[in-house]
Amino acid sequence: MGLMLWLAACIMLCAPQPVAAELRTFGFIELDNLVNTDADQDFADAVKKNEIRANLEIKYGRDDLHLFMKSDFYYAPNLSGDDDPYDYRYAAESEVANNLRISGTEYEADFNELYLNYQFSPFRLRLGNQLYKWGTADVLNPTAYFNPYDFREFLLRDDDQFKQGVPSLSGMYFHDRFTTELVFAFAHVPTLFAPSGNFWSLDMRNALYTSRVGSDDSLPTEWENTGIGGRISATVWGTDLSLSAYHGPDRDPVMVPEQVAFPPNEPLLLTIEPRYHIVNMFGMDFSKTVGDFVFQAEAAYSPNKRSLVMQDLSGLDAVQIPFDTRASDFISYAAGFNYFVPTGKIFENHGGETVFTLDWFQARYADDDLYGAYFTDLLTLRLQDTFMDGRLLFKYTAMFETQHSGSIHWPELTLDFQNGWTLALAYVAIDGDLDGETFEPLFYHYRNNDFMSFKIRYQI
Image: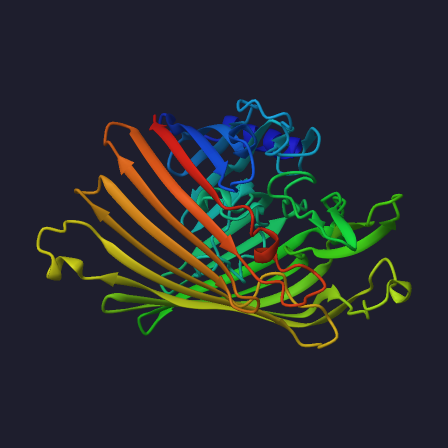
């Protein structure tokens, strides 16, 4: 990554400068607070996060040649007086990731977008950390192969925090009838999970066993672990259509039960390690506007995506650790629509925009003797509306994990004072059923993580 930044600086300094370079800066400062609503705890214990976030966006150069950075800096000190300061932490220990994310227990700096942009008609080149907005779905994107998710707050991170940038070189070709993009990602970036012991960790405890998620190390920076993909997009008969392909590290790790320990007088301790494998993916997506509706769908197919091989877990003596994994045909898709409700025709003085969103996500392995995908059969409904000439935004999101009757209900209210200050209030209720499953469904695992949050932001 350091070599990449050095090359970017050399290009900026050596390139001809017929037009004076400009420096543009934007950003905001935000205080984000999260309080768990479980009644069986003191208030100090209920406060799970007091986070200061500083967002900085910088563009230096010209329209055709510039350096762009969009970064976030986080600090979450223990302000509640809780005896356990690790209810919310970014990492188990200090670390620097391949995409220059710098993390500690109480702080983090990410550089999800930090790249050099060079454009000369009809081409555009970018070198550095990038986010690739492939796909059309509103929640999970099957065709967003490159950018791994940040699951450190389950599915509840803001949209601009949910995906990680990857160090890569990309090129786009703009034609009158189509656009082509090629991407080469030269360093692997793993999916992020909350560290063990965290409020959002995947640690599971029951009468028989305790599970703990181990390290989320990236694959070595070697040629066989690089990612390469391409996407071609066009508008055909009023429909925006894209085809894509990818070869490289799977964005989704296989969570492998790796080790077992037998602490005295305690349930056995099961360590689960995220493992990454090389996959081939082929996908398509489309979006079409019909009246007040925008219909969208995307799908991805892999002939060699891996998962855990099922075992008979009725008796611990027969369980083999670590679990085996095997490649299988795999398909995932998302489909839905956005409906721009013509509220103004009903309420003349409404003055805002009402949008109803529906999104359905499903993922399936072809082999029946493999454990299924972690996220599948996920239905998302969202209604958002603005009032008071845009000063008040109401948003209600409901997610249903239909396999295990899991649900998330998430109302939010944001007040924009239109002087740089905004105040956002939210409540999240999570529920789920065990349904006799050996491994806890994720919604069931987080059923006690209901919380209230409020955010104060000042736009610079």
